[in-house]
Image (cartoon, rainbow, N blue to C red):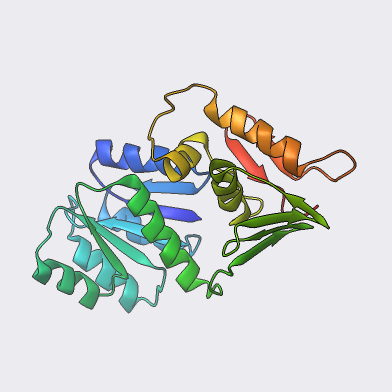
Length: 226
């Protein structure tokens, strides 16, 4: 995703910026409503994250201006104002979603990804994931590569499902830890490396095109093609 973040509070902007970049999303930060409107006109963004309390104008006015000018980019409002009336007003002026501070980064990311999928009309996810000749049946909890069945532990299966959910996308170690173990930091410095190595031995067997890839300094991904 390419994200426009309209947020004047440096700590919040930096927190979101670093988190999104760790997930390999593009981020452009605007500290005022007017700067955000000008940047939005470029049409380069998939999602706009909009704070309400900006120094030059209210976030409601920013949202309203964008909608009046025909900008239909999904907008997620981010604010400390959490009354029902505030949320209703935000949605009425054209916001697509509303998240109150303080917030969990994973929830913010999940909401943004949902807006992105909705705006791009992605089909609902299947219970069977397939990348090249690698197939994962989420109902049966079975994995096959070609005609060969692959036995995985619960954690190995969870990591593989995450990687197969978005072939080609790089998943940071932090994201994998949070999704699979529920940790925000790695209590064992090499736990991800160990599990990825185990998966490689089982999935990328001799004679097959390697699918699991390490992107140095960023994380891991499953190649989009075999």
